[in-house]
Length: 310
Ligand code: 13P
Ligand code: SF4
Image 1 (spheres, rainbow, N blue to C red):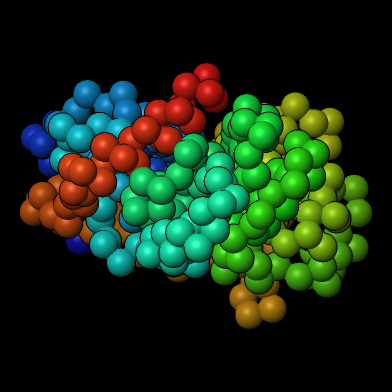
Image 2: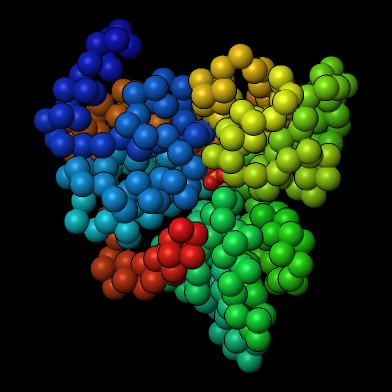
């Protein structure tokens, strides 16, 4: 089927099912183009919470669809490919976190969980953060309790430094952001010496030290729009380049590759395709569902985050 026909079929099924399509900035360009809303994890969580349509098609990865279920339980949440996982989520199984907290009860940790984690981990957390609000949320953490930050050691270390507060960091990381090397970034910088380096906080410290600006995918847009520079070196998953080129026309965005590939791609994010979106709307499957008891526990720290990041 031609792409145009597929897009028309998606539009027809979307209307029939009373559905909204939400997409993360790392989705394929053609998915971003047909989505009703494209955003970072924080903006998508808000959109999912407010969604009035009966069906939410979540073009992102599993934990994002799960977050939509937690925040808006009366909607049907579809994930075009159920295998769209996340290495950060995998780096912190809920049972391991529960065992760690059990073994360290005397510490009375205040558990801050990056939204890139499972519902089981969210249910054990005091508050959730995204890369767009981690500083703001941690500034409100109780001063008399030590903080345990899970699962991303890179976002955790960056936020700890920004806020000036020590935190115990879970040893997790995103395999896409950890593939960037100083050499690769410097290679691109040598080609475009006038371009500021903009990186995501999931990158490792040697990369963060090279950056002119570090922020979530969403915040890259106003930064690049408002900057006087005409071109930028973007160190994160390549999907954001499409969004930047669309929303900040006239400026140039240069991606950084890894040792293995000329552009950094999250294979989980890229599992979603137009065809799978059509199929999930047609079949009303795969659907993401969460047990109610766990949902109620995971909802609390998520709502705390949304209140604190208003
Ligand atoms: P943000 O879009 O919230 O910056 O997150 C990046 C990411 O890796 C999502 O999986
Ligand atoms: Fe997870 Fe990294 Fe992919 Fe984001 S880019 S979904 S953090 S594996």
